[in-house]
Image (tube, rainbow over all chains, first blue to last red; front, top):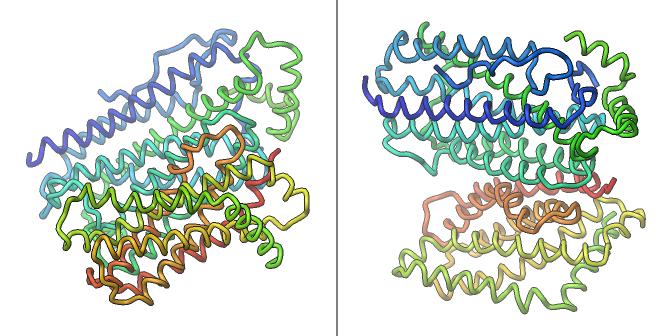
Amino acid sequence: MTDLGYLIAGWSVGLGTLGLYGWSVVRRGRNLGQHVSPERRRWMTTDD
Amino acid sequence: MSATAAPAPETDSPTIVTGTSSRGTRALAFIIAVGVPTLLAFAFFISPEDDVQRDAVRLLYIHVPIAIMTYVAFSLTAFGGIMFLYKGSRWWDTTAYAAGEIGVVLCGLTLITGSIWGRPTWGTWWEWSDVRLVTSLMLFLVFVGYLAFRRIPGDPTVRARRAAVLGLIGAMQIPIVRFSVEWWENNTLHQSSSVLYGKLENMTLFTWFLGQIVVGAIFLYLLIHRFRVAWMEEEIETHGLVGALEERRAEALVGVEQAVGGTVEGRISAVKDV
Amino acid sequence: MLRDALLVAAKDLRVEWRSRVLINQVAPFTLLIVVLFGFALDADTATLRDTAPGLFWVAVMLVAVLAVQRGAAIEAADDTQQRMLLSDLDPAAVFLGKAAGLFVQLLVLEVMLTAAVVVLFDVSVGEPLLMVASSVVATIAIASAGTLYGVLAVGLGVRETLLPILLLPVLAPVLISATRTFGDAFDRVDADGWAWLGLLGTFAVIYVMIGMLAYGVLLEES
């Protein structure tokens, strides 16, 4: 495949960064969750 | 296997849930886990190479969806800002913030993947005379500033209000600058939007569409998690860590009621069913 | 409203005149930037002439950040903003006044900068009218954006270091357009300076309007 190096670089940077970022957010969520009481943790509202 | 797969399973008994996951995010994670390999298969093997660009076109299947979601993210930030200014609702402000941070990540990736695509295609990593490149870079910097501003400790409402204005001005700049400069100086290396002109053949179009869905799902997944993290961060900032005092809970009830526009009991019982 | 704006502008300029910080400190810094560019580029005259427009406007941007920071610091020092709000002045008028004050200060600095660039970089100004017009229009845009973002640099425990990252990306289009017009005015670039001037005008109008609308919102402290 032509330009394979570029393809691999581009795709891995793209998906990899998103994955790392997602992982860090989820992890932070778990850490924070231990400090916030369950009642105040609920944020899912469908309207204001 | 992509790193965006579902998080490790966690216990579901109410008192031990500590993460930001939910049924919704788990569903999205599943879609992503299935979608990414499928997309890779289509992008690398099933779709054909381009006449002019040869295989480099395969980079577009990730670059273009990310670029589009960047605009979606920043539009959401701007819109969230407007809604916050209009209704004073913390929910909208938090959405704006979460979307803004994800937007910065996506924008950076747009620039990087675009640059990687540009090198074999145009022969250059960057091109100063391309309006779309320059305005994307500008957008990135503007919202990096937005994030820096949001991280300042202080009164959340004032900060939210100012951030809303910042985000609005920043986001609004981009179409203004883009279209006016393009009109004034007709000179760009960028491809014209081939989707609009219907020149793409079926498999290419489908792969692009698939990419859009996968990246869209990734965006939603990230948004939900980031929103919840931001919400908790603000809880901690305004109410301190939990040795959760009863009086603080009472305060929070009032605050949440204002934010939510309804009684908390009703909300909590509705939410416990999710 | 215009009268209120003029009052505010006059007050700002008077404060500046009394302290002479602009003349004593910022102006030398402006010249210093030009000199530093000269040293760094270590170039022949042709290169200097080519890069002069860009260097000029980069210098203006840096100086504008300083001027805005200084203005914000003065405000913070004696809480004038609160007093202005309490005095029922229309925020849009306050914005116009402050932007006008900043405009004058920047214009003065640009005159000096132009002289320095013409002399040190051996620039020949083919179209002085274009140069002056674009200076004026670009400075309107810069002063407006600067005043608006300057409010954000006050209060809330914000560091001054935040201002550049907020203000400069937004000013990037002004930088680009102004450089093009100057390039044409200096006869170094094959660009239609007047067309770019039109673009500059658009930005100026937009920033002024945004400023008038958003200034009041940003001033609210609670």
